[in-house]
Image (cartoon, rainbow, N blue to C red; front, side):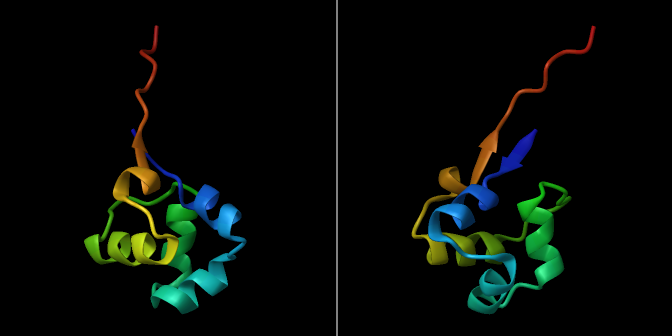
Length: 71
């Protein structure tokens, strides 16, 4: 499963969702989806904007987490 680490990046920079929305032009509801890991699709433009604001790479923003096999 793909995990978005936006919450961690925002906490490090002390930025809230409303501020990030203003900085990026991304709708607050969309940011909330990334923040809470409830997003279904990822927009490349959003990745660009997040990486620009946080001065990071995509690997700092997303990670792959293996799901445990259900027994």
